[in-house]
Image (cartoon, rainbow, N blue to C red; front, side):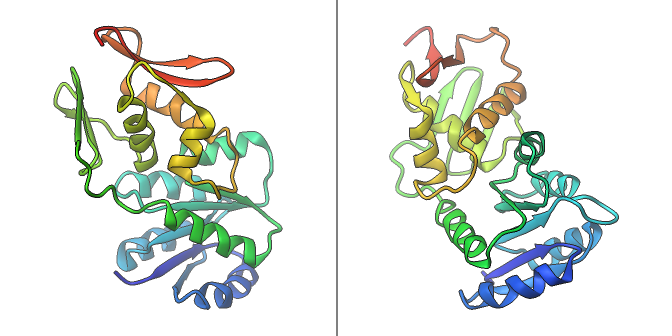
Length: 230
């Protein structure tokens, strides 16, 4: 696979500053100055990672992130001048893997790229690749989740969170353990990203007590995949 990094930002100075630092790590830098160009170049170059500014012409970064997530789990780092919690949550809800606020140092951006890419290696040599809790079936090798045989559109990180919880039914998993195992101990972002992912998983699975299992919040500790029959 080509080692392409797509930078989507309408500020040419940002791209000019980041480009030599990223190329020094043996990546090819592809750049786009608006959301439409970003989507076209994403399809054409199949980048390993996307650095995506929120405020862009034609199509904003949040919508670009949403459209990429409809077809790909390629890691996305949102870049923005905004620092409010609402903007962070909006980016994470769109499926972003990390979030960095301007101004930043090029070295920090490179460190985050490397940290995110270290965390996306596929699950290999798994002795158990499919977990079933009727009517749900999770196949970690294919990164697929089905309910009643219908595919549920979860992101890669959401599937990994769900897999970790379902692999230890009725056991409390600490938020820090989820963060370390899925995002990595060198994760730079907001630790509340775990809570955001759990919220999205619950919404996408439409959990309202109709199954013999559920995802429970254990306040002050973490989360538990509660199964009544285990």
